[in-house]
Image (cartoon, rainbow, N blue to C red):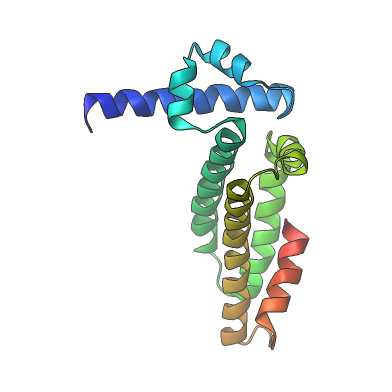
Length: 165
């Protein structure tokens, strides 16, 4: 990685860290880009180099959180012996992650206000689809290992997913 790329990554990480802290402290709508810039001693140009605006900055944070969630889930899932155990553990894991997430109230506020652009909606739907894929994989595994017999995986995935997220 070049020195310029390293500096750019460091700046982006700083923006994300400062924004995360402010979103947790003040909420999504009460945190302004100006406050993020001031708290992080970041120029407006640097912020807009990395993010189109506050919505996209928050979306990035959500996407990074999903990647962390996915990594932790894969580690936990590897210790489960069958689909029933995976579904049970996914329930516990999701509850723990949501309950312990300081951004959960911010996410609710964001989702209530953020559906202004097609790109935002598409990115949120992509995140949702990733969670649904985890559930669908468990349901398919249960069909294969005899844990259950589900004839309509699409509908069942939608129903089960709605219970989680």
